[in-house]
Each structure stands twice: as C-alpha cells, then as structure tokens.
Amino acid sequence: MSASVIDFIATEARFGARNYEPIGVVLSRGEGVWVWDTEGNRYLDCLSAYSAVSQGHCHPKILAAMVEQAHRLTLTSRAFHNDQLALFYEEIAALTGSHKVLPMNSGAEAVESAIKSVRKWGYEVKGVPDGQAEIIVCANNFHGRTLGIVGFSTDPETRTHFGPFAPGFRIIPFGDAAALEGAITPNTVAFLVEPIQGEAGVVIPPAGYFTEVRELCTANNVMLVLDEIQTGLGRTGKLLAEEHEGIEADVTLLGKALSGGFYPVSAVLSNNDVLGTLRPGQHGSTFGGNPLACAVARAAIRVLVEEGMIDNAARQGARFLEGLKDIRANTIREVRGRGLMLAVELHPEAGRARRYCEALQAKGILAKDTHEQTIRIAPPLVITSDQVDWALERLATTLTQDFS
Ligand SMILES: *Cc1c(COP(=O)(O)O)cnc(C)c1O
Image 1 (cartoon, rainbow, N blue to C red):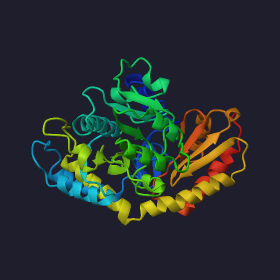
Image 2 (tube, rainbow, N blue to C red):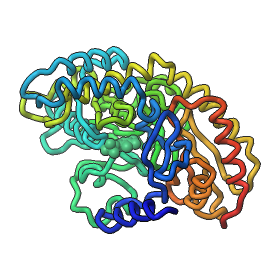
Image 3 (cartoon, rainbow, N blue to C red):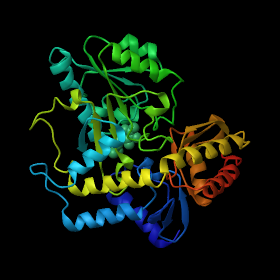
Image 4 (cartoon, protein in one colour):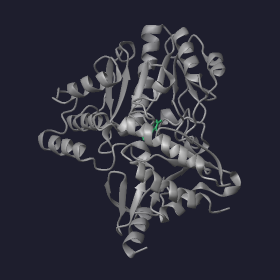
C-alpha cells in the first residue's frame, strides 16, 4: 500500500466513529460495474453499495439530470410546491401501480414513516383502541438503524445498549405462515417483512409463503408492508420482488436504487387508505420530496426501464447462479439467489467469509461478507455476460483456496 492509502485509512480510524470495518481499499472513481482505488487498481463492484448503485456507478443520464436540476433549484421544503415532485409521483405511481406516494430520504425513514402510517390507519380506519396497535415483524430482519427499527431487530449487535425500545412489535420466524396466523390479534395493524432477507444472508422464503401471507393479511385486515428497499427496482430480475410471488403488497418501501446511488431518496407507496390518513402537519421531512431528489429519482427510474436493466438482471443473475453452482469447492455449503441478489454460504470449517472477500479484492473483485459465513454478490444490473464470466473465474479460484 502506498503512503496515501495508509493515510486515508488511518485518518478515518483516528477521527471517525468506528461503526464500520471496511475492506482495506480506498476508492476514488467509478464507472458502470467498475470502481478504481487511489492507486489506479480496477475492481468489479459486487456489492453496489448494498444495491443502491444498481444502475451502475455515475450513470451519465442520472448525472446529467442531477447537474441540470442542481443548476435550477435544489430545495424548497414542502412549504411550497416544486415542479419536480408531481412528475416524480406520477411516474413512480404509474410504474408500480400505486395510488399514493410519500417521499423521504433514507430507507430507515421510509420504514419509520410506514410504521407511523399503518398505526394511524389502524386507529382511524381499522378501529384499534388508541395505543394498542401491534406490528408483526420477522426474526433476522433488517429494516435500518433508527431507534424504532433496531428495537425490533433480533441481532444482538444491532440492539445491545441502545434501549429502552418502543413497544408494539411481535417477532415471528421468517418463512413460517402458521406463525403469522398465530401472531395476528384484533390489534394487529401490519406485517412488515422483506421479500428476501438481504442482510440476513439472502434468505429466500419457501415457495408459496407469500401467497399464504397475502391471504392471512387480507382475511384479518392487516396491512402487508413489503420492505423492497434492497429487493426492489430490478435487483431480483423483476421490478418488485413481490412479482415472483404473484402478490401485491398494501404498502411498498423503496430506497437505495431509487436514486441510482447519487442521493438519498426513499419512498413509501401505498393504496389510498394507509397514506390517506396523514393530514397536514402530522408527518414530514425538510429534504423529503425536494426537486433535486425528484429529478435524480426520475432519471434513475427512467434508465432502469429504458435500458432494459431489469431483464438484464434476470438474465445475468441466472447465468451467475448457474456458474456459482458449477464451482466444485468443498468450501461452499450453498449458493442461492434471485436475479442479481446472490450469496455463497461457506462451510463453517472453511474460515470466515471476510478472508475470501480480501482474497477476491486482490483478484479485482469487491464483495462483502455478511454474518461470518456468507459472501454476498450483488453487482450493478448493467453487468454483461463477459463480466459475469470474468467474475466467476476469479470466484472459482478463490473459493477453491482454503483459509481455514
Ligand atoms: C438498506 C436497507 C434499509 C435501510 O436503508 P438506509 O438507507 O440505510 O436507511 C432498510 N431495509 C432494507 C431491506 C435494506 O436493505
């Protein structure tokens, strides 16, 4: 490592809160699926900023929209109208078939906003006694880092010494429809769940699970809230992961790729009932729905659709998964995935996934371990067949090494 690289890392460590443990690479440039470090080494990005850069790094059309809008108007607050918000609403509603949209910034804010909205809906529409609303969530969920959200996490690292936490959440196992049925009470207002648990290690529920979930929610007048912040916008080879299940959520949460990685933009999408309960002054955000965010999101959605990225994710995801399954290495316990949301789970004896990610870095691939034994693979949706094959070659040689 050159002096400058050591300096960036050391300076971060000296001044920054140590709430991350990054791989030892300092990135300074990105284009499409590629990123470069400060020394000019090139890497295939197989994390895509946790799926926020699905459209590829520095997509020229999103960049152009951002620069153009930044020259005209960036922030008005919602005290006034702006000429981008209505267009964003119209386009995202048409694309997803939603009735109402609430724009926010981070994913966690979208989750918090959905929790507030479904509770309000519960009291004002469903008739739940005030203060009694219950929301059902799944074990091993990841919905963000705010206090409200970490309070219903089951990951000790996420929760420990951050309490006390808010009541009103019930935790059930993921992929178990009978558990959902057993947990619903007359005061249940919503079931909040990820279509595929990403941070938990790309956990795909059993076939038919979401059909049953949909039926149970409908039968009990419980709002089905799908957190598609990571799975949405093409990542799994469909616009929304719910399409694989043949269901429709009552409330859908988007974030991450909604801006193609340029800016924090998130949204709550719902039918009329849920977001319809919010009246002026009851919820808000200074930056939510600002014209710069809206212009960026509009461009990010447009290129996703016009450039065929969703179909490409399905095609290249299938190729990638097949290629991973063909790797004969006794380090591998299981490979799984849907679209370009892929994971390689290692045998416990194979050593920590982090070691493999560091070995991949040396071969020009940036990937991230999750939960000790799993390597997550989620490249931008613009990846080509040649690039998939290039990555597979390097993964194969790395996974046949032994770091135990
Ligand atoms: C990343 C993520 C969030 C939180 O998004 P932030 O922008 O980091 O607040 C919520 N839910 C899921 C499923 C995510 O992957």
